[in-house]
Amino acid sequence: MPIGFRIAPVTERVDPALIARAAKLPAANIGDVMSRIQTMRGGFRPFGGKKVIAGPAFTVKARAGDNLMLHRACDMAAPGDIIVGDGGGDLSIALMGELMIGHAQKRGVQGIVLDGAVRDVDALATLDIGVWACGATPSGPYKDGPGEIGYPISCGGQVVMPGDLIVADADGVVVVPRAHAAEVIALAEAHNAKEQKAQAAIDAGTYDRAWVLESLRAKGCEGA
Image (cartoon, rainbow, N blue to C red; front, side, top):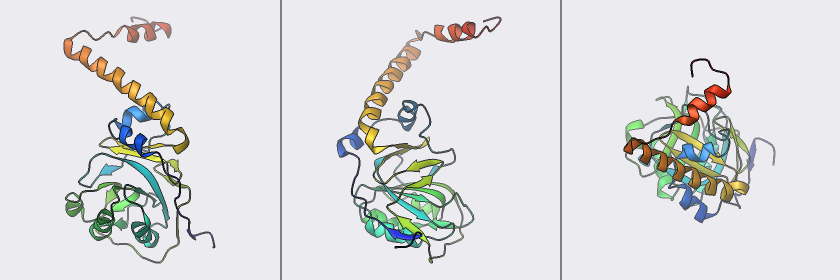
């Protein structure tokens, strides 16, 4: 099958038990424990009715302005999957809208992450599916290809492999490599517990900020 018109089945997905744990954590905490280098670039906005999603990536590469393979992905993705589409970051033509995303929701897809634009914004907000995209435009797409499904893609500045763990909330989107998901989620849970403890101290007025002065003094900051 020629490069540019390839479809491969997504046969390996992150453990459902890890997905359930990840869904309870802020995307920021998950990104923090991966040295802050696995978050998609800023600009991804939530358009759908679901504001938090976690699940395995169903990867799609689309030509800018063309959604042929995204249509096929809506038919192929398994319930619980998150369709992650590389649209090249182009915002001049919407790649998905109400009908496509509504069909995906009906099939059990829980989310769409699209490095590109969507349309039908008011309708998307009423759907029980998460939709993260970089913008919106009324301009509709072509349906000629090329494109690929089930291969590694680039989305939001991150490499996404089929089956990787995707977590998205109001802050944006983070990518957890499937092979490291157990370790990352355990670290993120510990990090989240630490932040909750800090928040409790802030609420009580007992938050210790000594580390700020220590850091400044270690850097030779005068007046610290």
